[in-house]
Amino acid sequence: MAQGSTPDKHDVQIRRSPKLQAFVLVFGLLGFFITAIVTGLYPSDPSIGFVALFAYFALFGVSGSIALGVIVWLAVDLRSKKRMTVVRMERQSD
Image 1: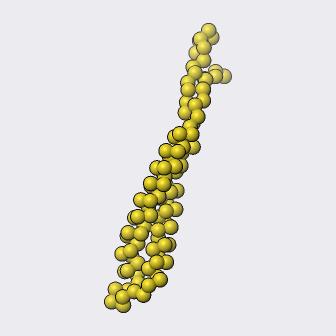
Image 2 (image 1 turned 135 degrees about the vertical axis):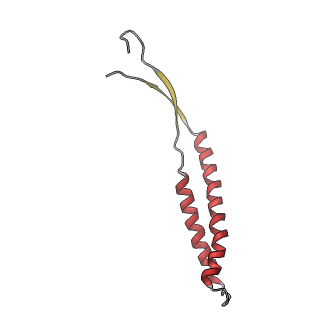
Image 3 (image 1 turned 90 degrees about the vertical axis):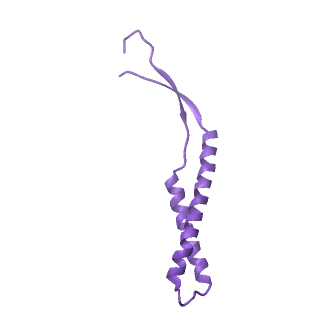
């Protein structure tokens, strides 16, 4: 950079965005445990067995709870976009 020139200035946007992986993991585990509890509350058919019945219901329980987690993540992400701040950055030479 030449001595007489002014430093570069840029406006940047700063926001805290939520991590999608955390929402998917938490809601997936929550769906897994809720499915296990609800399946265990009722007697299973002896010809099918508890594990097969749980696995069948876990397909829907875990998938549904992950979908709900993504919807919650989208709402939180939209809220974080509304709360972003603009900061002016300028380059400094050493």
